[in-house]
Amino acid sequence: MKAPERYYDFQKDISGCGIFGVINKKRGLIPGDMPIQAMACMHDRGNGLGGGFAAYGIYPEHAEKYCFHMMCDDDAAIKGSEEMIKQYFDLHFYEPIPTRRTLAIPNPPKFNRYFVTVPEKPENEFRELPEEDYVVAVVMKINTTIGGAFVVSSGKNMGAFKGVGFPEDIADFFRLEEYSAYIWTGHNRFPTNTPGWWGGAHPFTILNWSIVHNGEISSYGINRRYLCEHDYLCTMMTDTEVVAYELDMLIRKHGLSWEMAAKCFAPPFWDEIERMGEEEKDLYTTLRATYGPAMLNGPFAILVADNNRLMGLNDRIKLRPLLVAEKDDMVFMSSEESAVRDVCPDLDRVWMPKAGEPVIVDLED
Amino acid sequence: MAAKRKQKTLTAGRTYYKQFNEEIRSLVRDGVTDFIIKECNGQRYLATALDGDLSFDIYGVPGQDLGAFMRGPKVRVHNNAQDGVGNTMDNGRIIIEGLAGDVIGYAMRGGEIFIKGDVGYRVGIHMKAYLEHQPKIVVGGKAGDFLGEYMAGGIILLLGMFSDKPDAPIAGRSLGTGMHGGVIYVRGTVPEDQLGPGLTATPVDSDDLKVIEGLVNEYANELKLDSKAILSENFVKIRPFSHRPYGNLYVPC
Image 1 (cartoon, one colour):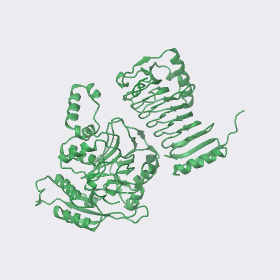
Image 2: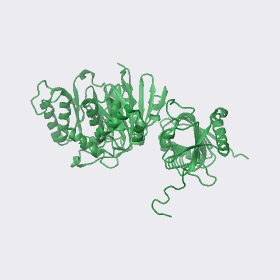
Image 3: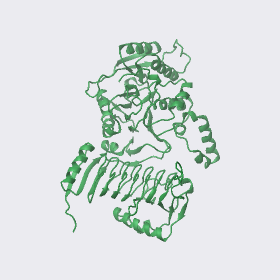
């Protein structure tokens, strides 16, 4: 299904999905087969209406350029988005994203990728913005003004691949077994109250951020309005989109640590704050007061990545499963242990993190 | 006289759960009683709704809802288990030699679940009992939040001994929230803050100790543990503070 009529009117979607992530702390490249097989093991956590992957380290030859993965319904959308990309950026290289015809994926949109840099002296309405804000502004402009054209990802040396289908079919369509990455995340979608359309599949991304999510963000309305005040416009009709933009706003723009951003998403309960020491009590009271509209209400298990990190986080009463496993330089995060064992039978340690406590894994360099 | 046993070894591998369960059911109809399942890899619903004197030895990690609705079989998982083990199970015994996930024993109505290690959130939620049907869960490690939430009957015994989480409290927050039947026993003590609203932990009496000893002996026997070491510490109990606390919510009686 392509972009539905009046797609911007849709509110949100709830879902019971499957997620998987893996990071090699020494930047060792992990072939796409691994996340694909892990997601295939959790086939029944989705219903064929959405699958996707994010991969980091896949464009080393263009590592310093922003890579726009574009999804377009038709030739007009390609023409419009391409013109806009050329208007706002220096375009260094572009090509169709390689795909293969597969029976499981009928009538897909068209995918292209553009490797760009921000011009030294841009002459447009965004010229006063710092570089990364400039990129965000162009992403928002493409998503909101060019019908049928959507930015699937816009980071450096990373990309998102997603669409309507089971994740293993989407991987087949995008030939993901041909890629290797040092961080992978994957998602299997089970949407329940918005259409399973290509843009609504996970991951959601902005700049280098990517997120996959199992659950439902009941606070979507307030999160979306809050983001709108900060020039982030939601266009994908799936609740999870707000998390990508909140990450960018809280961590990149407001300078919060990942741990503190996680505490905005899943804050301690007031009765827990009451029992804290003075300094912590002050901190969390302020955090909740300042970032109340950024709190994510509802069940979630999320995996967040950028070029250097993988983070797993549950909602504070853990209404969705999440498991962490370690093997040598690799750390896995998954909805189910069986998916991890399928691709890595012998593990050094397996545990389930505490609700609301982020598990953060960094690259070692 | 013991009924005739017939054993069968199956390799699960990547067989789709539906096909695999169909094979098991067909073998049960053909008189197979004892299954050894190798290379289990997330197959859901194993032993679900099976009735009678059967046994399952599972190697690898079984999928969601292991032993759901089952009435009688004995299931042993030699590794970890995932979520929803023993969902609404009626009778039988499930032994997990590793850790287990969330909502273990959800709405369980009878039988036993023995877990050696840690468990996730909402274990024993909505357990219930009727006359001689008394479901029992023993957790050797530590538990996440909402242990025994809305519990209406049965016994949960939490040991906190074989845990991967040395710094965590023995149980998460909101222990026993909304419980109105049954009992939760905890080895050692449980911090007051972790209890659900209105609940208190009180010392066990000699009747409780008899129940605990019996349960620990069975548990230790199944998992080859030292029951004396387990019983060497005091226990506390958490009981509901009222019967049917929400009985008057909609229709006052």
